[in-house]
Length: 390
Image (cartoon, rainbow, N blue to C red; front, side):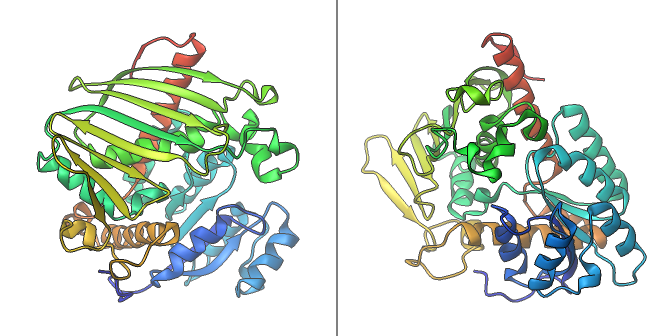
């Protein structure tokens, strides 16, 4: 149970790049990072428009002198201060992630970055090497993985309760972009522009979320090859897809599917993870995130509820309120930021044993997300053919 008591020695001095007024995700970052006082927001470059970004930072309560025109000035000026920033969160369009993350690591900063980390595996592996060389943590915001019952799902698989894993069915298929909403919504417009979004839209923007959750639940499964077909049903989005189906073969013989879509008309969110074993299945749906379905062949369906004593201790560790009260996305993100902070402190202290005990979506998860998208795009662009996973 999380009671808000400090698990680190002090708050880390923290800044944001992006996430200003109008940002879809900026407030979630701030709410999560500041929830349990593991971070102290002291600086930022919140907007591509310096005046607007400075005004926003002041409204957040920051000193105007630490609200910078851009991230380059932010890193340079904060490095001169004895109380300069130690961590930066990057909440900017996709095409800037690689450059800003690289510069932050070179400046000796820990990083929390929106996904995707970058556009190519080569770039991602460069960031991975740089993070290792500088001894810095890179957290990637796969925020849904902070829901506690996912930890219980992982433990059910590890204990053999499902038997041999046969099928992994993943989807993130909402309906909010079933029409060309980007014509009126700037926050959506860049997501369907290859210059800003990169080589994919829904594969990288939403498909990697259930993919990462499956990696948490099934750490021993590895993709052997995949086939991807993608479509642009709103034609102006081409060559970026607004719908894609990916088939995957795993190295243990299991088979997986990922449906990534923004045109599933009528669906509110539509993120589901279902794992089918030889003895039982589990299913998690993010519209009912406090529940995990556990279905044993020949027995009644069990609905496992967040916060209950029958869950594994690793699932109960992230509870913030007692059973029966629903927890949501802000709590899940706060759980991740708590893990980011403890991992950063462990790295600062060179405490390898403590660091090894903290599970969070880090640089390896970021690299794998980029790798999956790159392989999906390669398969789709070859005409929807099977390709070896590289």
